[in-house]
Length: 249
Image 1 (cartoon, helix red, strand yellow):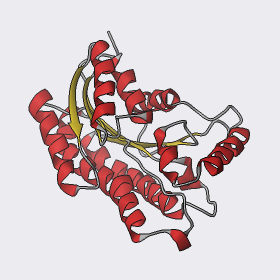
Image 2 (cartoon, one colour):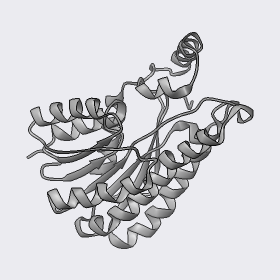
Image 3 (cartoon, one colour):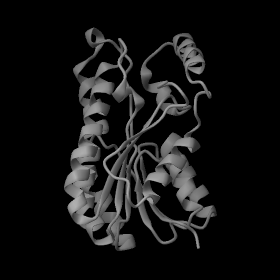
């Protein structure tokens, strides 16, 4: 018997990186998947691999900065699968600038994707998670726990996401629903391309990070394993789980 056989799982940001790796990992465990992403072509590539693994997959492409796209993700999932067991709020973006160079458009986009979308998707999913005694995993960041000169709004919203995780976990424990965050250090994903850095600067940043991550910069599958762990641990709720490859020490 596969661990997540028959479980209905929503994963945002599933067109690449951690989201795609998580969808593929769950597909191998017999899950039914709703995968969401902005890039329709890459989302379909994720879906194809999941289907090859035997999963039933619902694809929903759309931009989570558009508030009206949020509730239909939950509604369409329930229409197709009649339940929701797990919500993985993974969709992300980043802007690696100083506050002095941060534009209001940057700030709004970060807020909409990193905080507003997880909060309201969790709200819309909760009535269904109550029925299944399900769980939520928010993909946060070790950046929520550390400070450095650039990317302050990103870190601020990830910190707020962690506070949401803890507060909502307390609220949801009354219904048998668990809520946790996973907080990765640097992972090789496409989000690095959204930093807005010149190629040579980004390469130097990654090179420096390789030295700071004692066991190397991670691959998305490592975080997918952590997400599966949080989903399968019935007594863990309200935690922020650092997966840092030694960076935090």
